Amino acid sequence: MINWFSDILYKLECRFIRPHNVIRMSTIGPEYRDLDDIMLHSCFELLCKYVEIELASLNKCGKNMRFLFYTLGCWFSTRSREDGLEYLKGQQKMVYADIETLDKSLVGTPRPEALYAKKVEEIYLWWKDHRVDLPVDEIDDDEDTEQLKKLMDLRMGLWT
Image 1 (cartoon, rainbow, N blue to C red):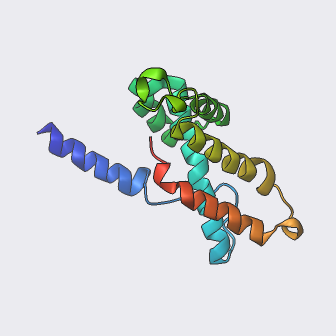
Image 2 (image 1 turned 135 degrees about the vertical axis):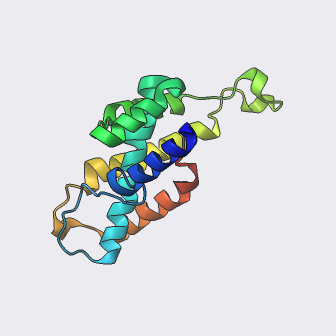
């Protein structure tokens, strides 16, 4: 009996309180924007959500409490740039250990997760520290396109 009731509550929550199919972009206002600009900002908003909520929750609470922090992060906008970046820094330190690989030449070299974390951090910092605050006359569309392509190359790894 409780399962159908919680299913209904979850559907109502997703429909009216916290829809998962809506991207709220903090970098642009509600005024009209061309679709190419909306695409750019929405994709990078998803990257920011990944770093500042999902990765931050892993850094702050570990895997056991991640769901609680993620839920609170969505409800109360508790985003943490610092915790997300700290998690990425920890991921970048991952190297192959002796027992993990048969190829001994890999021992001590960065794992794929470390290389991926470095790329995510670079794109995230470019967006947050460089691109968001640029005046309109200094925006380079070619650079935006290049960074968006890099983000698309990483999209299959944006899950926790």
